[in-house]
Image (cartoon, rainbow, N blue to C red; front, side, top):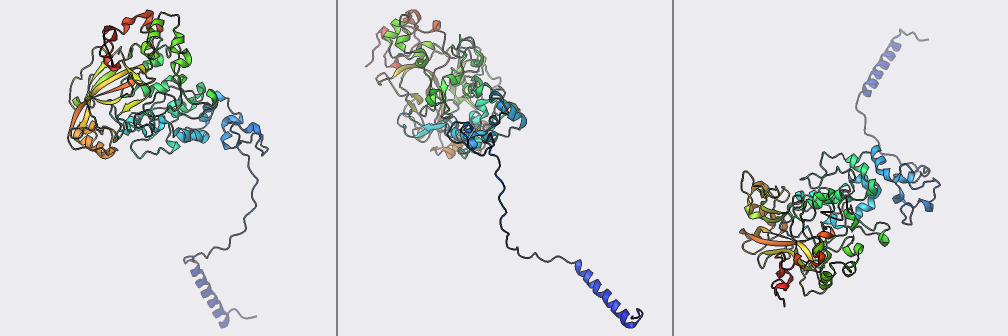
Amino acid sequence: MRDPRSREYRFSAFLGVVCMAFALGACSGDDGKDGADGIAGAPGVDGSDGISCWDLNENGVADPNEDLNGDGVVDVLDCNALASGAYQTAQLHVGYFTENTYEGTQSCLNCHGLLGEDLLTNAHFTWEGVSANITGFEGDVNGKTNLINNFCIAVPTNEGRCTHCHTGYGWDDNTFAFNDPATVDCLICHDQSGTYKKGKTTAGLPDPAVDLDIVARSVALNDGKPTRQNCTFCHAFAGGGDNVKHGDIAMNLLDTTRDFDVHMGTDGGNMDCVDCHQVMRVNGDGDLVDHGIGGMAYHSVDDGEMKGCVDCHGNLAGIHVGTTVQPVTDLHTTLACQVCHIPAIARSTSTKTEWYWADAGQDIDPVPTDPATGRPLYDKKKGTFVWENNVRPELLYFDGKWDRMIINKNDQYTELPAVLGAPSADYTTPGAMIYPFKKMVGNQPADAGNQTMLVPHLFGMKGGPNPYWVQFDWDLSLTDGANYTGQTYTGAFEFVDTVMYLTVNHEVAPKEQALGMDAACGDCHSSGLIDWTGLGWSDDPVLGGTRP
């Protein structure tokens, strides 16, 4: 055995220690780069199929009783919480939104996706349609998006305020995604809690104070049927305030009596709006065809099913046989039902009948108040107004067709007052009947050089840097409007008189208050309450008036 003390042994040991030191020192350096990936291994074996959401008995077969929506196909569209038997129908949304937070429209689309797609094509969402009822523009697409009125004048540049009443979220300029179902507001029509509302200046987004979970839980109550409140909130506040625009649609109709409206009075028909303004259904009472709502549209063909007087009450000739008004109806065969049965509008809540934009921009303090209605006669942003109760409607011939002023199509006036909206018919038009209308007059800005009725930029910064309601400078506001809409503005403006007419169909009075009751001809003739020239007469025909 070698002596560990020998010179050779000690040198070998020393050399071993040195080598080990170098080896350990190398371990403290940086790692080298990874090598290239190797060749992928073969795919593993597929796992077993899961249970499809529609497969109620978990047998892996599309059984006929699993076609819950009745479309002939068993697929994901048959999947919902009801399919599992978890909830009764009336409690479906209550249960789901107790367990799950409402996270916007997508929470609805998770189950109702195709309905979201459907609403994208309806007038309540698009605010336009094929304008079959606008004379001269029957094949065009027109609507609220490009019509001019004498209330807040027009939507373009002002979307963020106007869309407070849009059935969608976020429409604040002309880049809005009309093709995205996620922008649909389902709750505005289907809330049953009575608590839902939109923010006034948020382009249709919900008011932050609203508990959306409470609203979502309520949707299936009342079978999800829109209530008077759902509809009236927007339609009553058209034009910027309660009953401002229409005159026959006010918030008081939510809880009124038959004295003010026989159909909606809680002691009368107690009807909801959708009882007459219906959606289209298969065979009239079957499955939903789409979300289009029937109405008397200015701009498009009827979206849904609009029920008229004769659908419930029978025709004019038959219903009055043997009554005290038969002599009147026998003699006046072109009178629509509304003429006699809506003797006045704004019988409870006053309506705006005149609006003068030329007076806007002044600092007036205190603001004068109408002594009869208690409503303000002036607003710095909007000008001066006239309010009225018990307004007798104007009578005009109407066959469903309108003359409307449309931005960049026929927006130059040829006479004054400039007619912004009026029935196309007169007494010579075949099939035209006499209907009642609310007459609205006022003044608003027009180009002094080319007679174009101009669109002012009133609200928000999306339509330009100079909204009138901030700067109170008409020239800057009209410049913004022209840049946005493409209208020609010469730089000179003036205020011109305007007139427009709106249909009257609500506030149907009890029959004992109808005009002509007991053959009372004096309700119209010799009363001084009828503009006979609007019906083509030189004067009251009873007093010798004539017409060609």
